[in-house]
Image (cartoon, rainbow, N blue to C red; front, top):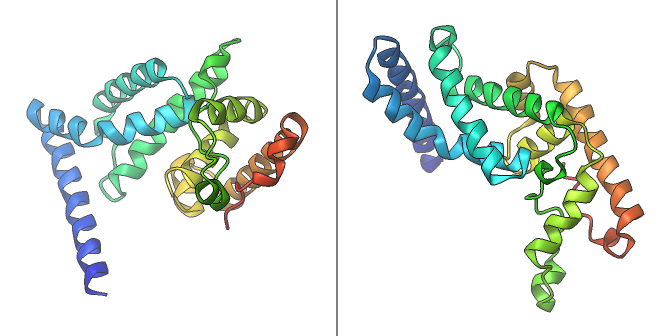
Length: 206
């Protein structure tokens, strides 16, 4: 309990720090904005990379996010957590990118560890990373950008549905439907394209 209280206190302090940095940036303090970028760059890049699946594109989108952040600092409402506002900006830009791409299959999300089993560890037969990427590349191609984004945030970023709903500006039931459909679609595609891996599906998390 004490550790939990300390964690809650730390989170509240960090949120206050974020808000203070935003306010200082609004006042023209460039060092405050640089600190904000430094603090959030890992999170921003990580989410971009997981959604887009391409390192160079993720870097470009991350840079665009911070440009947009600078341009929109005045729109941030400190009544809300800064990360929620930032994540909304990241996901909107990433979703727009995915929707606007033509036939660039290389940008499909290829980083999710879709196949995880205790048997792999126990038997020493873990699938190679490139093989996992190829499998996920194929099965995730059938997802819509929003389904993929919801799946990434829930499965990889460990965000609860309520938080994802706030980030996307959607209802929690809509987010739940996106997640359900994403899991269902990937299960179907996995069975169709890789039947030998169908029993390894571990994508459904409560």
